[in-house]
Image (cartoon, rainbow over all chains, first blue to last red; front, side):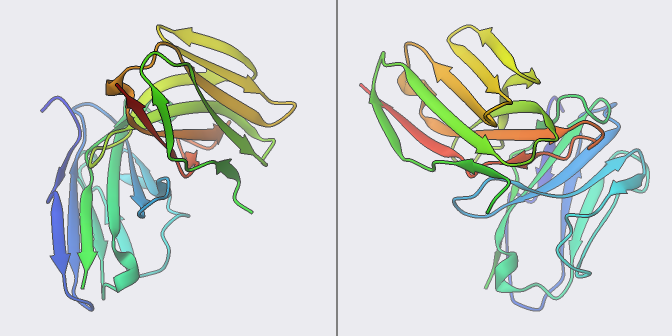
Amino acid sequence: GAGVSQTPSNKVTEKGKYVELRCDPISGHTALYWYRQSLGQGPEFLIYFQGTGAADDSGLPNDRFFAVRPEGSVSTLKIQRTERGDSAVYLCASGRAVGTEAFFGQGTRLTVV
Amino acid sequence: QKEVEQDPGPLSVPEGAIVSLNCTYSNSAFQYFMWYRQYSRKGPELLMYTYSSGNKEDGRFTAQVDKSSKYISLFIRDSQPSDSATYLCAMRYTGGGNKLTFGTGTQLKVEL
């Protein structure tokens, strides 16, 4: 596709459940970023990948959050034992290289009930 | 105190007005400054990208950076109803990859 694709667009889950959020970056983009946006706030950095490796995961809030990008393209953000406070829009962005313009997807709206 | 401060608004202006949006920041290491536009239930879209201090103009949009005051601005001339959106400032420092620090966003409504 032409842009960054995120699936699902909406996810409702029960407290304590495990969820996976998927990001398909723009083809050929080596840099991939995850951000989290709570209601009325700006996006907050979670993690970024350069190729397959996580170059900076300093924004992950705790060890319930984990992200992978095994083949340097698609990335999955995984959240274990979800809590109501995890409810937010999770945004993915990709760029040709680290430091170049990043293009955002539409986000996955996660609601933990 | 947040690293980047931005008035959340909402800001309502009549069509054709000049809009001024602003952010202040505390980290003097920030070197790259951006403005994003975000429509409801959409991802942020990059509008302007500026390095260090100075002005940059692109069509109806002008971005200004004053590093001495740690203050950045976005001006929108001849505002249109289609400009109604949330405007986010963002910044990063050299060597920070593309790890962006965002403001909270200002909600703008341009009325007919």
